[in-house]
Length: 314
Image (tube, rainbow, N blue to C red; front, side, top):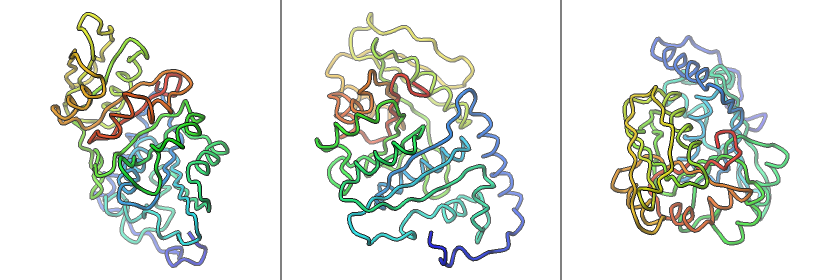
């Protein structure tokens, strides 16, 4: 934000109300619960579209829960974008009731997070994002997927090779036109059905553990996790299921084309989130252009979390 921007003027903080204080303390408690996994940085590339706003609230909510640093990057071909075009972090937190209206910038840090906004001039947003990530490694990428069209076409053929070099990073994809599981209005989480496609390779156990960790950390009420194997029941991999949640864990085997079966099952179950583990050095590439994952990402109507083997959670 520009130094002389009106919102940079010092405002006197007011005392938190009881409701605001309870919400703030709950966020800080959740941050302490990220047991064994230190999610320190989240990267969100934005093109200022409505779809990117959905990805932004997911990135912000996860940053709050993990007590992580959130970096937002916008790439513009011409110097037309301004700082105020970025999603308003304080406006969002005020709307969610986590900080008082008219709070200073310091109020954001008091919630245990730090937010950085970066503007870059370039005609190649993908190359610019990758260059930024080379200098500023991150633990999690949260981005909107343009399933048909848009200024930042992550699924274009010319994107695959450079993105493959970012293998090893966890990614949360929010498809265009999908609200996801974090409410833009109040920051509440609606996550009742999680779908995990499982196969012998890559091993699905990390996806199971990450789902269990997500359930515990977000203190989610009872829901259902469906473990979907596309193939004969006898070939379904053996998994160690958590016993410390109130959630139901169901195992299902279906025959058919993997991408189609995953999409059909996600629709039937009204899935809120799909968690997929990808293998090898092209994990990020697989998530964007692999036969099954690409089909899922192009047509799915819920967020998809990609966990490359060897990543923090994978």
